[in-house]
Each structure stands twice: as C-alpha cells, then as structure tokens.
Length: 154
Image (cartoon, rainbow, N blue to C red):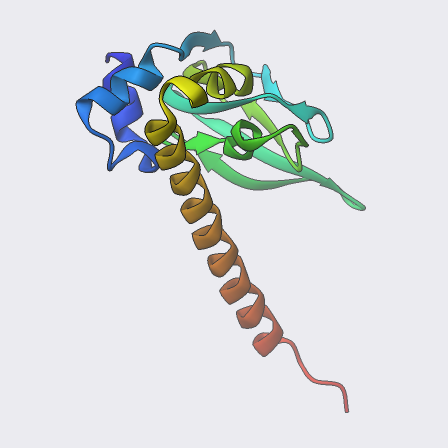
C-alpha cells in the first residue's frame, strides 16, 4: 500500500484530491513499530499524529485503579491528530498491540507546509476539528446513557 493510499483510508483525508494527498504524503514518514512498543505515552508532549497502515494499537489511560483500555485501533485509523495543531500533552498512551506500520505526520512539517500550501493545511485542520467534534458528541451521548442508567438517590 502506498503512502497516498494509506492517507486516503483515513477519515481525515477522505475529501482530499490526489494532489492534496500527495502534499501530505511528501512529508509523511513511514515507520515500523514492533508489538509492545509505544507510539506515545500519556502526559508526554505530542509532536506528531499517526495513521495506521497495518496492525493494531491499544489506546489506554491511567486511572486510580490502574491502566484502562479505551480503544483498539486498526488500519486506516488515526491517533494524536491534535498534535498537528500545536504542542499539547498527550491524554492517553498508544502502544502497538501487534507489529504495525504507521505514517507519522510531524507538527514541524505541518507548520512548514502552512505558508506553502495553506489551503491543504486548513482543510486538514478543519477535518481534525470536525473529527474531534464528532468524538466529543459521541462521548456526551455515552455519558447521558450512563447517567440515565444510574439509580437515583432516594
């Protein structure tokens, strides 16, 4: 699978033209990640986003009762996208559950592309915002469901 094809599988790039995909393919680094290796760790500063080409990644978060699995991501899925928009602390850890091939898009490369390809960068930033908004709405509905299922106090 080419880098362009891998980008195309991601929801963030679904509306991109071939030209737009090639812009980001030119700065994407292909990496092999062995099973058990972290892509990033909770509380570290995020400097890149990742798109899975192959394999699976466990997303976890530490809590008072230990580590909790939040998701298992597979090919075509992305993680850490907010790092492209600015350096922020990772809220979760991501560890390869199986051997993985990933595409890494670094924030420094995204920042370097902005004056050269502003439309493509804006389109990706808006796709990240839309994806995050959808995830927040989904989480809100899950919380409402949990609250509704909770027995009320007498």
